[in-house]
Length: 149
Image (cartoon, rainbow, N blue to C red):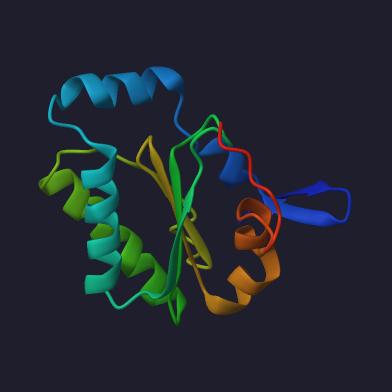
């Protein structure tokens, strides 16, 4: 896994590279007239639950980020488990709603990013998830005012 240094933080370079372009998102939406973000989110959460993902959370990104409407973060106990969950998710999304996904990090298996265009799914090994703490980056702090854009 390649890394890029940004100050004191080390981020995988594939995280920024894996996000779909606006054109790809438009193509995915046009190709699926019954396309619904709520249905897609339900498919993602069901797939992760079927594979016994741990500590699954969903974060609403509407109005907060240009690259997606939701982020889902989950953990798998081992690199094999993380890779299998990501592979199963991609296969299930392709089979049922017919969504193609961009996948990064599957070779290493520490952190796999699955980009559906509207939902970014991050599947981590627990120690990698604890290190990057994406939840803290994207979720509002308790008691803080979160603007409703």
